[in-house]
Image (cartoon, rainbow, N blue to C red; front, side, top):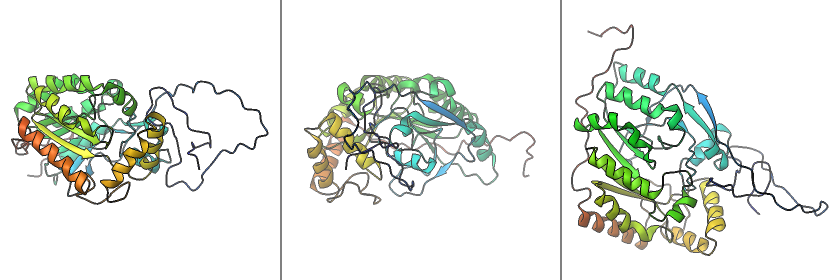
Length: 364
């Protein structure tokens, strides 16, 4: 059966978008499929229409997301936006759009939700008497510096709240827009209260343009690492995701380029294909790399014990088997040679001082 969109129409590539499909989310009870019975004449296909980004402003009920996953290095995160305009076809956050009765495909990258009260909610959370300070990760799900942040500035407002009470945090992004907030990040870095990871999937501009159509180019991301590092902000590179047979051969070159630009830390994640992402990614491969598609998926299965996705803690980020072990060895050897991860990344939680809300009285 061919893959279809919400309305049953065939998949079409749209300029500047990652997914060609807009299938129903996994919680929807109805599936639609268009059928050509041959009675109507075939019309020549026109260029697909431009897909504009729609942003819905929402007042979230909470802003801190708690995490107890043993293979993640943080316990609390903030995501200023739902959906992501970068359009990365591999994004593990895509399935979350199904909870909004929207598609993990085109909807995820064109129908966004901006949490306009994020800073207000964060201020309230940090002022609670029982709040215990731990480093917060900004952008663990969707990118906090995706293009709409230029206008909404929600991420900046969140950082302003954290800076006002000396609360430690980490940022992960693939957008050079993070440099806009150097005026906030540099003073926090001097207090050992912030670190920034820039995600670099490939240094090949052709692959990046198809894989991450609205993210900063690889060169801009490397320059962001350089600018952050030169400004004194502890910076790392995330080689994520590593896509077997497509981007894995560039691992060492990414680490070398990032280290030369000043990165002090590094990490990597093997391609993950949970839920609807499996079909979206395979369709993307057929559209852009049809001759490599089966080789890529075969290698994925070899590194996932015969499956296309592994949800288990520990192995889900690194894979299993000989090929996964060889990848881990390549990463470790390159990091040792380049002096990456040679120091601890701990942030200081002792400086946190909660700010009182208007009308709030001290407990003692």
